[in-house]
Length: 390
Image 1 (cartoon, rainbow, N blue to C red):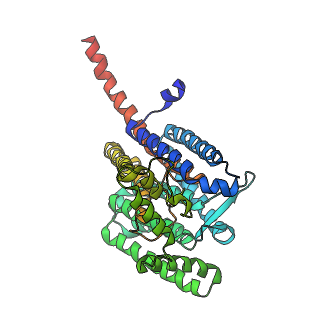
Image 2 (cartoon, one colour):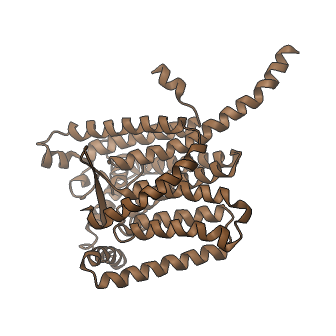
Image 3 (tube, helix red, strand yellow):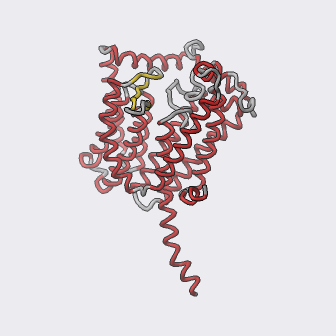
């Protein structure tokens, strides 16, 4: 344990946030999987607890490994990752397994484990866009040399994700737009990209009208949006149950394990886990979770400000914004501000590869933080030596 702690570097506040979110995750997942355990494992409630803890532990290992990799290598890895994600997304779009109505999953060979390639593609695209922004700062205002090369990968990845998972495509697209804005891309160029995105969406819907395979997924988006706007209780069953959970939680909550709405929500351990947290820990617990994500983003921004180069600054901002933005979307769905999206609560919702990719993303932030700390220590060494000699 001491050896592990000695190898953990980087922003200590971010490590603390990870630990606290993991605690919330373990407690909420254990509480919310009771019905699932009785339905699939004869009431063995420890099954999902042990499985989830194992996934979190492996995620922690991946985080430690990722934070020990010098950030410069992520620029090179992004090139391989972005080219690997394109055929993977294309294959999954047409041959992947459908889960949760509008998501497409890929089954890994040999280990027979499923994951959403969009999780991998999201991280790959953010790293790649950060690399291009850093590389082309000298010609970032040039439309052909600077902007076109940025636009192409963003359009390709989001178009491949869009038919199967609209919310993830929108999240990635928005993250890239914000990252480009931070990266000094001209606002009118960003506007052009928005128009391209809208045109791609219109084209997809047009094609879907004549394609039953895609039409079913378009229908899922349409029904979710219409249900949200109509406010119909029957159509908004999930949201209504989440609102009951939040309302009955009060200020201090029902205490751990005492949730009743976990028996009625279809996915209380993933999409609507925030509602279960508020029900059991009250408004106080809900505010604490929001606060932890805001602290994560704040500390990441501090890393961005201290970054000596453009690439680690853009990389840290893009990754942290993506995580916190996804968290806010998940929580806004739970309180009925947004229609149901299927987005999980990063590092809290039960999952497999989604937790691992989230862990790697946080590890990347910590990698930049670790190297900044090491550089600061190195710069301070001569001063300390001179002080002793004097």
